[in-house]
Length: 157
Image (cartoon, rainbow, N blue to C red):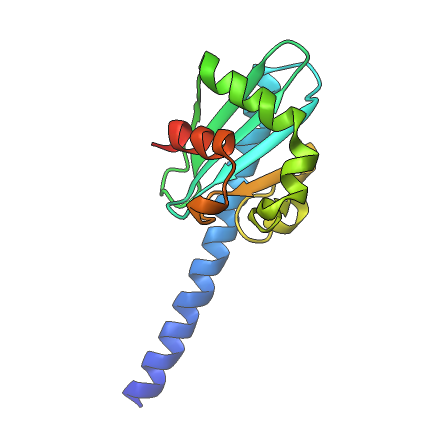
C-alpha cells in the first residue's frame, strides 16, 4: 500500500512541477514582452537569442538606432529580467553576425541554430515577437565561428 501511495505521490509531484515550469515560463515571457515595450517603441529589425545549459538566455534585438538586450535565467526561482549593456566590441561582433547570418547558418554551425518556433516548447516562447533565430551555445567550441563564440563568452561569462 505504501509503495502504491509513493508512486502516486511521485507522479502527482512530477505533473505539478511540469505545470509550474510552464506557468513560470509564461510569466517570464509576459514580463519580457512588457519590458521590450517599455524599453523600445521602434520596430526590431534583427533578433537573436543565445542560451546555455545553465538556464541563461540573452535576447538581443536591433532597432534602426541601436542594439537592445535582456538577460534572464529561466531556471532561477525568481525569473528576474535584467537589461544588459552591449559594449562596442560586442556591437561589432553583432554587426558581423547579423550581416553574415545566412553564411553562418549554412555553415557547419547550422546544427547549433534553432528556429525560434522550435525552442518555444523547450524553454521560452519568444516566437510572438517574431525572433529570427536562436543560437544554442552548448555546441562544441571547434564548431563555432570566432565572433559568435567570442560574443557568447563575453555575454555569459
